[in-house]
Image 1 (tube, rainbow, N blue to C red):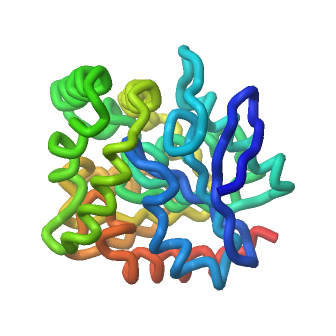
Image 2 (cartoon, rainbow, N blue to C red):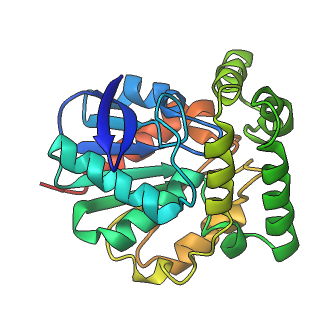
Image 3 (cartoon, rainbow, N blue to C red):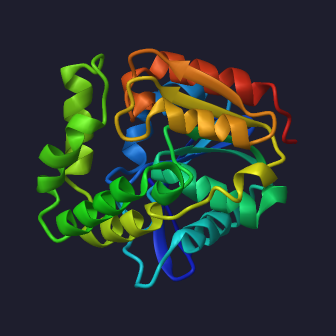
Length: 264
């Protein structure tokens, strides 16, 4: 892992490969380790960069208040530190919300978007009572040991095709979540970005598991219908963390799309 001092925070990240830059943004309760199959499968075609968002993994915890815009600004600081002018930005779940905000603030630095199993914020994609209950549940769990997250959230992360090894891999990552980061990311997730979607004017790929229990395929259709020209790839049998459960299909979709978009 490498480190950069961004806006007073120590941000850990991994970087591998050569070629166009592919930035990977993980979901809440996760860190850069969730992208292991993408480093293995995509680094021969891209310079793959995955951070531990502030409040996750080996990065330091931010001081409150800290919201989606702050994470987007930190990502911009990291890209500046790396000398990256343009990147394909891939966001999974909560990372997709950050990716949307990054585009809103820095459209000229965003070569393309890949939004995977994400939301237009919980309030923008889920029925009101479900969004509020989800936030309340997450805030409650943020006060418990991180190990408690595994039994509460792991069953919703996969469809029926995840191997035992993959489930254990994610369980280890989730058990090391930062309580502060989880709380702040939960609050960030409860946003509503619907108004932004029609203004996205760069190539956009949507990747969804058709067995996603947290962000159902109906949300993918919402994105497809709202973002001009967005392409949608649905992975049969995969759940919310489709990049881990179905890495071959996920990597193929991302590779084909990003290689078709020049960001030089």
